[in-house]
Image (cartoon, rainbow, N blue to C red; front, side, top):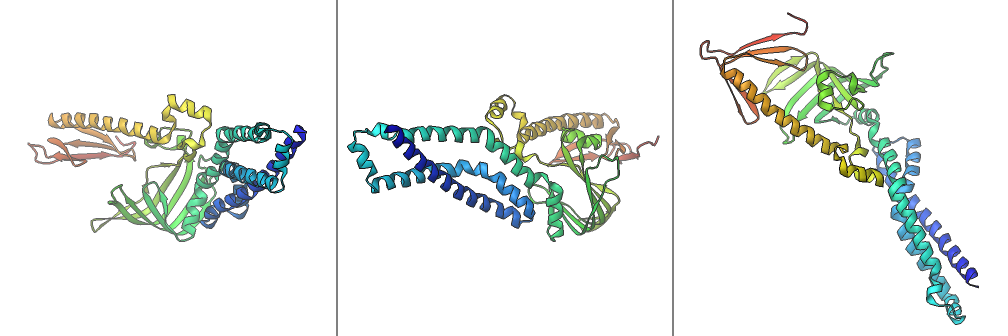
Length: 359
């Protein structure tokens, strides 16, 4: 008799649980898909795939509510039809009567633990990759809709966007040509450092190992992917004075690995490993690199100041590979800027620029 009772309770509970979970998960997954679909980040077929990928992560939210609802409805029906009274009248105790519920709860707890520890992080990674890793689709989609797009701290607007197939054998993974380009670059305080327009620009998505040495050293990960933007016939407005630069290349910008920057994308084993190696997180590694650069800049400042005070020449290398030799009489730093003082004998600051390959 007990097995018949337990089987009846379990079947009723799990039937209601599965039905309620299916309804809740489908509704939540649809709601999660609406925004990226409306923003143009997903096509119709991608939206369906995104909904399917959203189902396992939504189970963690829907299952506890569905279980509570299913248990309430199942026991309410049994109580309203006097089945519970009949069970007690037959001498079955409360403990035995609740065994199916206890076992179902333990089973659900194990399922949710497995989902949170192994399944959900993997599905979240795939969902995030569909939205954030397809950089070209998001970037070009924004420009084609007449909106500005952002690369790092640069706001870009273009009148024309055209996809151009990379040359065979080229390390370029994808590239686009822009026409009628406007660029605005501002720092964290909102101060505009670059405000200009260009007749044409190229956007290339390429592996970091194919970039110049300066960009590779700054990004610090040859396995990553970066965006390189090159402007043709760029006119920059600096304090009301237009300056034309042709060509002008922005520092390469690494495409963010968003699923590496949030613990929710990690399994339990990965989170345990993270404790001993926090540099896996991009924001931690970025702070470490920034600290190293800050210390290096202090050392560079000290070296340059000593050279200038002794009357020795200061040799620098520009991002384009040009060698700049400066002869000055002194050197000071103030308000995040470096100032050179004229030589005491000549009363001038001498600057010599040598192009790459020249003597």
